[in-house]
Length: 449
Image 1 (cartoon, rainbow, N blue to C red):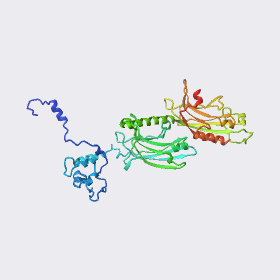
Image 2: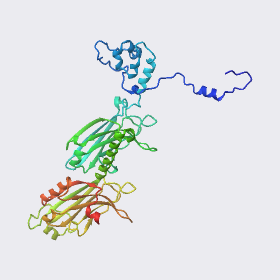
Image 3: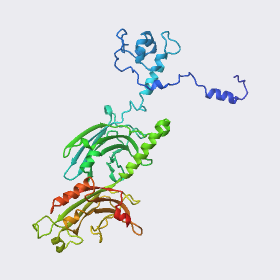
């Protein structure tokens, strides 16, 4: 293009596009084999499978150039990337230059690669108190490999990390516990103890504790840095176990679109089965109940462990004998209101189906304490054939109350409910306390009502 003096510079659109889009030197297109593990200048020299071929020296970065590999023979070519396998001993067009080889290794070892990214570690302790059915999790600190800290999540190169706990299966907002947030830190130290109450021995055998390290963002949604999962069966009762685990990415969810026709049906079936299992095993919280059968005073020592008033709790009921039901407290109830809380109360229908007894309503809480007792006049032989239904409800003013969860205790129950019922029948006069899991299944009698 020539420009004469005194004339205005004019460039056509074709010349403009040619100037702006000039690509410069064209680099080879990356192949899938370039993402596989390869030798780096700092990696140790591997042992060659062919004794006749001496290993390539790694004293200098030039030892990994394609020219040196080609000159050493085809025996050592398989130690490098598959890209180098296409090179000819004569050094034809299939070989790569030293610059492109170094650039490739830098891109693979960048922070965007899952193989080389250090998400960090999490240090914590677990202790299960069998007498009180409490699980204590002490979150100590979180660090990164080589003391570099956690993975930066904010624009300033730092993060605002916190730890949240979930019990699997059945993770929900009701059983989520959360630590405080450490601002602008990649090596946070919490030293905070979070406690789950109402954890039974059955939970310790089948539950898994998920610890997630997240970055708190005020303007956008919080981001997950990494997580660690610990089966609770690894924790022995009344013993503190120390953990120092590496943070990992959450397991990926199977995508039917990314699989073939044969696996697509299996994936859909597994998703339906998982959703059904989660629906049937949905947990709505925990309930602490105490049961005590009081025999007639004329047949047993009047000094047996008793107590508690309630419906039908007069001296005549005590003389004829009956069942004393104590509603102690609830924990980790499901939130039924828009404010993230509930207004729970406990309802127990009379075993003789004559009336219903209710506790007081506790406002705006998910961990209410009731400490109320109810007495039902009934003989031991009749009690063995009865069913005790205990339900927890959310009180709503001006509309119908919401069902939170319930539990049924009888000789036909299973698990902790059956053990609690049989212990009460076998140990007359002794108060037996046990935690129960509230499920979303409505009892039959209440469903018919």
